[in-house]
Amino acid sequence: MVCTVDHLASAAGAAVLDRGGNAVDAAIAANAVLAVTSPHLCGLGGDLFALVHDGSSAHALNASGRSGSGADPDRLRAEGHDRMPHLYDIRSVPVPGCVDGWSALHERFGRLPLPEILAPAIRHATTGFPASPLLAPGGEFIGSLTGAGDFAAARRTGDVIRRPGVARTLEAIASGGRAAFYEGEFGEGLLALGAGEYLPEDLTRPNADWVEPIQAEAFGHRIWTIPPNSQGYLLPLSLAILDKLDLPDDPADPRWAHLLVESARAAGHDRLDVLHEGATAPLDSADARRAMIDPERRTPFIDHTAPGDTTYLCVVDGDGMGVSLIQSNAAGFGSLIFEPATGINLHNRGIGFSLTPGHPAEYGPRRRPPHTLSPALITHQDGSLRSVIGTMGGDAQPQILLQLVTRLLRHGQTPGQVIGAPRWALGVDGADTGFDTWRQEAVVEVEDGGPWSEGLREHGHPVTAVEYGSNFGHAHLIDVLPSGVLAGAADPRALIGAALGR
Image (cartoon, rainbow, N blue to C red):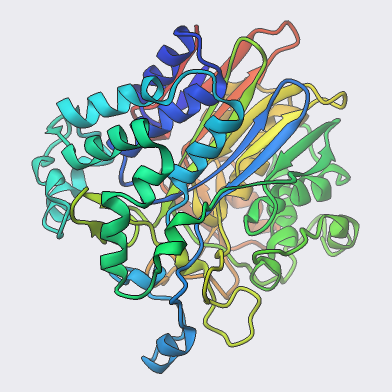
């Protein structure tokens, strides 16, 4: 089964499975199609994290890029910046890790040759694809930017877009691997755009590392995710906090939402201080953080959250291999800088860096920024695969996943019920860019249809109603049932997503 935000990507992954590929092959194929059709969510100019369950154990891949050797925080501060530039500034563009991620995944686990895996994406980039309802509204503006002329054709949903530069790049990767990307046409263009931000060796050194996944026990299962520089630790930590609280049996009970909100806030209130490259995830603090929670009233934490644009996909194959993969540009089309020769838009994950002197996440040469990307994987106590699950949603990803995992494991809901149910997320008004890290008490945004608003107010939470699908992520889930049958769901909020099985 393959679940993605775009039926074209799901179909590509399913076709690879039909041809004898495994879950990793299908995940790469689906992600490559998304890199073509969904540049507002992900792409060759972004970063990637993945969890792979090989049938017996979980493996974690960190393919997030590092800043260039020319990164200079003093220069930014001298220009008057007290935070990283958000858009139109190459200094917020670490070297993209996506292609390094594909290379590492394929080298370790891939079964089919790379040209066969990338063929669907190359075809869509060459012959064209219909602009989705999520992509089309921004086409006219994006198409006016330097290097982004491919998107000028997207004025309405269904308008055909062709991306010849991306097709050419994918063909180069298929034949020449990561070197054809980082040291080829794209890499040369990135060095030119950087004007000293990057050195050639920044592109020749891979940005993909196999790391030890982190995990915690909750609801009789083990929940696995990526260690820092990812904020993924917030999911197992919040679940470990929640697991020993007196949770109502009915998710419609406002006290259910209150306890989940407080578990998420207790897990993440100090995220700005503790999340950085090389940090140790504070999973052993669950008991102390749980003790801070009032089961009846909102606790006066400071919340640190922000939205983002990302895509998540998951695959489980017939041999029991599961892949939980997330890939992102950070903010929408990212930095709004396009490498002009290939038309590849560059992410702006560097906005996660701090410009506070001495901060452990301070911007500097060859560093990874704090990341919101948080793929997840669930196993039974014996280590066998139960589920692959994840979502887009910026800083809200662990909050969304907390709700989904609780519905799945604690309440026994089906994947369709889990993914389709209304959600809440911590939010704030007045963020200048939509990617500011909030340093004030957040309100609880309740998605249209959520039954908790009045009850949450009675528990002391500021609450606002938000339209269904607004900043609540595109989540996907594949669950391995006790019979071995796969049950999955793609998020209806994505409008064109699909869960396809064979």
